[in-house]
Length: 236
Ligand SMILES: [Zn+2]
Image (cartoon, rainbow, N blue to C red; front, side):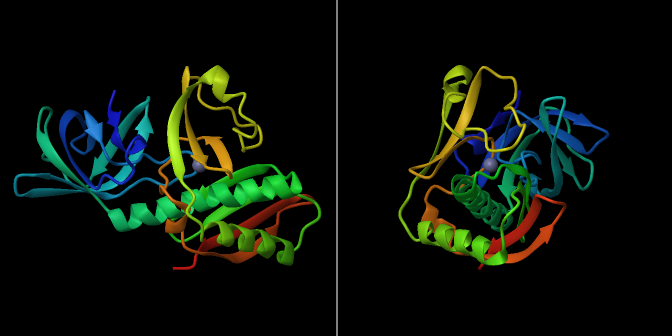
């Protein structure tokens, strides 16, 4: 099993790794990685693998049969090769800021309205939320984003740690997604925004709310009687 270094240090921008397997010349499994695989509403990372003078661009990272698989842009790597990994940090850092922002906004919406999040997707340029709420309007939503922005101007720590499944499931609000159960594993990773939110989560986050900056509403949509969709983004 690949060691997912980003789970314990989301700020790792480079690392050395060994190639464990190669499929069809371009699907690479490593012994350890800094690249996040698409999942949990967060897109995959980009970057490159370097072996000597040869640079392989990482164009997609996915999880297949439980393994993190890196798709590279051309063949040439073999099992046992030592490679140097370099993350596309600009892309990742935006995703980290957006992911942490998404937890804060979801938590405020949930606490304020009781609405359950029914879907969410973080992209490099925006965050999309679906939630069930009958009575709402743009002003109300902007109010929640303003509250979130206030939190983003405070020194609030974001921590991640592990809890036994039983204990984790007792934490109020640890599951924010309607109908979502965490993976069937004995130990869950918890992302805690101190005083704001605790969730079972496998994503990459900033370590202080100040790093998020500001968010702003992009647009809202009605997707049925009580199904709302909002788009918001980092202001810069
Ligand atoms: Zn999350």
